[in-house]
Length: 412
Image 1 (cartoon, rainbow, N blue to C red):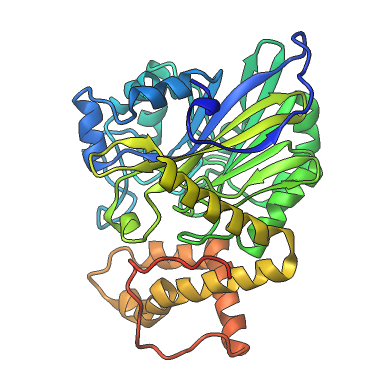
Image 2: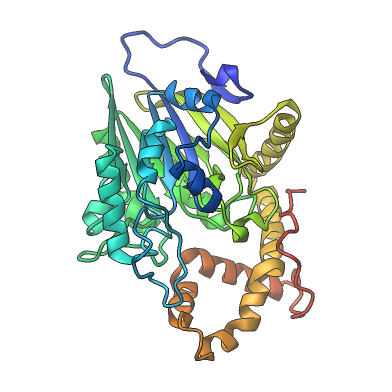
């Protein structure tokens, strides 16, 4: 099965076919894959969470990658959180990945250390036993920052897998994930481009429940293309975001949730939808590019969209992608997202800050507070909130917190 057999939004199609002898490959990239709860139970029973048609689509590509959002580890392991919070799945899930057509996973994300170093080591072991290539996390920062190398015929593909710096990152002697830091990452791009025929950056970063990338993320992704990356693909916001052709490459700012069974995430409208990115690539060139929208269904399946839902997806995608092209439109759309996040979460965070910090029963106070002040995404949001408060664009009234289920705004 190919994108032509499903409802797919074609963004680029080469006018001339490439020679048969030219190195080329078909790749399929998905977003966050976190089969918790009901999805985990189905997989452990040996049941499918993708229909046969979607599994065939995965297998029709020479390479299929997703972000494995939860460590695959024993339930008996202690969590990083003293209160026991964390995401995890049974190690047997590794075997189900391959049976669903997933051929590789990224591990750079903010949950990979939820069950500390041993949780990561068990994940690496489970993936090794299932013969699933992976990258983005390891025993130290050098291993975590080693790109995933995929060879398809004569085409050598390098995928550098990075994550926003939160509670997950490795250092010189400590296991964890790689971390996204443009001042550190950009100087390596030229060397990586020379090493590979095609260079993709797979990036777990950005603001949760937003429809447009922040100014920091937009600028950084464009800088990665300017430095020599051919394709930049983001995930983490739990909603799909726009796609743009920029310079000599392409950027998909967020693919959304391929699978994520969580009450916290599901409380926000639109988190059940995502898209797969299907591309035909040749040396340092995206020849063809299509978006294949999917959604999680009430019976714990992931299905491609029917005609009506597909048209709605196209309308939303065109709208949120169009604002990326012009600075003023992007700023207006971004400020709508800041207002939404202020009303649904950050105002409450600030109201509860002292109470949580000094509450003797809150054993995670230092862990969570430290993350608020070290994570670049949180810092950017706080800075933008302060700017908009100063400009009279937000209300400081502590009352009237909106319900999380309210839908994030679409750019006007």
